[in-house]
Amino acid sequence: MRVLAVDPGLTRCGVGVVQGAPGGRLQIVTVGVIRTGADTPLHERLHELQVELEAVFERTRPDAVAVERMFARNDVSTIMGTAQASAVPMLAAASRGLPLGLHTPSEVKAAVTGNGRADKAQVTAMVTRILGLESAPKPADAADALALAICHHWRGAGAARRANTDGERPLAPAAAQYRAAEAAAARRSRSAAKQYREPLRSSASRDATTRGARP
Image (cartoon, rainbow, N blue to C red):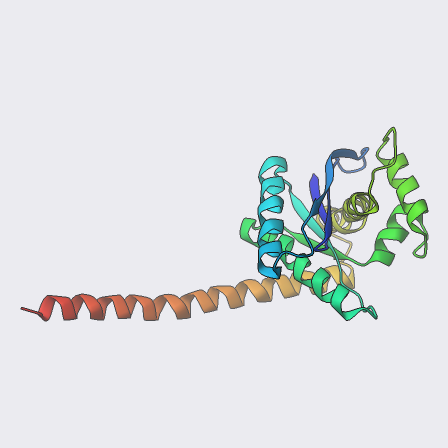
C-alpha cells in the first residue's frame, strides 16, 4: 500500500509518500516541501498548493491519504492558515475516492518513537532509521510528513486490515465511528445529488418547452 501524507501549512507544506506491504519494510517513494510566498494573496496561495499537490497525486498514485489533525494553538493566525491548507489534500482525496486518515502530532510521535511527547530530533532520527535513509530528511516539515505516513501505515491502515481479515475481532471504537461517519456522509452526498439533479432536469424541460412554443 502507498500512503501520501501531508503536514499542512501555507508557507511550508510537507509532503511524503511511503509504501510497504503488510508486515513488510516501509520504503520512501518521495518527499518534499511545497512553499508559497507570504506576500501572495491567500486564494492564490491555496491554488498554488492545490496545483502542486495534484501533481504529486498524479505522479505517485497513492492508495490512501493522511493529514495531520488540527489541534488548538495560541496563535490564531497560524492555526487558520494550517486549517485552510489542510483542506486541500482532503479535497484531493475525496475527489479520487481515496480513504483519508487524520492523526494528531501526539499519535504520530507515539507511533514512530513510542513516546507521544518525543521532540522533533527523536522523530526525525526514527524516521531515518525506519525508512533506511542514509541521511535525515530536511527540512523538518519533510520529516514530519514521512512520520505521518509511517503512522498511517501502522495505526490507520494496519488496524483496518486486521479488522477486515479477522472476522472475530470487532472494529476499534474510533474505526467504527469513522466507518459510520463515512457511510453517513455518502448517504447525504447521494441525497443532495438527487435533490440537485431533479430541479435541473425540470428546469431544462421547461426551457425546451418554452423555446418550442415560440413562433
